[in-house]
Image (cartoon, rainbow, N blue to C red; front, side, top):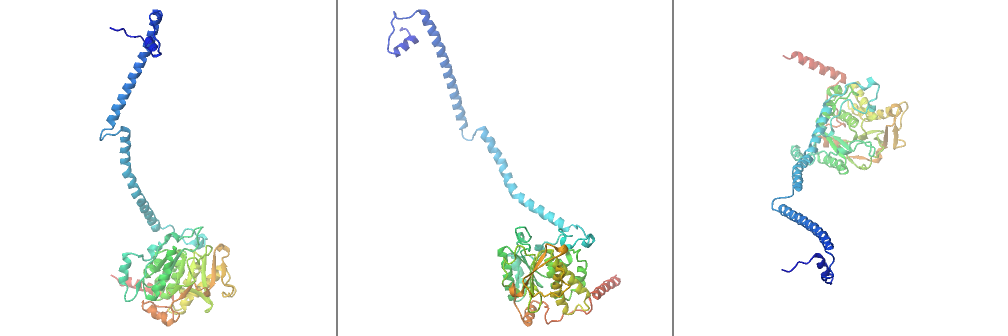
Length: 450
């Protein structure tokens, strides 16, 4: 049996030299070298064994993780977590905005129905236009007027119009209604009124020209009889304590006077532009109103009086407050409310008196025809408010029918009474007599009842 070579002999053979027996070192030296190399071999073997164990463990772990239908534990927990949160996130994105809208609607309904205060402003020594918050929140303009823009309801309403009359819809852009520092003071809304929403072809075409401003983020509203009733009777006006009595007892046979009062009141509450239904825009466009304009009124040079067919004002303007007060005063003090002169007294004359009282220049005769356009500024407690008076030659609005006969004929197709030629039909007497007669009828009817 051949003898095994020692590690010294192996190393020597690798280096290319042989060791003979005579060249061998003492036995003790060989024993020490053998022990040293044996320890090194044991460490190498142990390290190799550990590496082998680690390799097989990793191999078994990898094979186990790669089996079909089985994933690592950490990734499995993350996957389950995403499955639980994803439906919740989708439901939150869907129901969150709806919940916010419902909450805003409910709060708005509660605040609108709640009576904040019934106190009259004069008891506190404040002027109505100086009150930031109204005594009662006004009815939303969208709820006040009939809504039906590009809807199935519009088509159904068109069928309800008789003959050749055309149904007219509103255009609602509420984002540009309210005054902001970067925008104009006068809200971007146009108001017109008629007996109902069914207009003749000529008036419908003019209405379409006014409503075309909605493409430039304006709003257009046509107020019918129901809208006027809500504005007059369903809203509270502590600053006008006799308004409800006058409307209920004295304006039943006075549609033209009621129209004048409506023009002032709708500008007082909402602001914007009031245009007569017998008018169409001419030189007026969506950029006519400047940022600093607080109110715009037209003086007719031909008749030497104010023109009420076109007016623009910001909400709570003092001129509108004075115009409403002068209108109510003339109705209450009129000897005969069926007189046609009352239409003029509550229209151009009331507006002119309101402008004079606003500027405190009623002590002397005013010549409004000179130096137009003219800026009228308020004094004392009205500082900061202004009104611009322009000439009718600016032609912001042009009448459709100039002759009284054509105007009467066109309005007659809609069953509307106009303020020209036709006498106002109704009982003779003053407004107070009408109040007392209505009160006597109510009391008498109460006694005759069961």
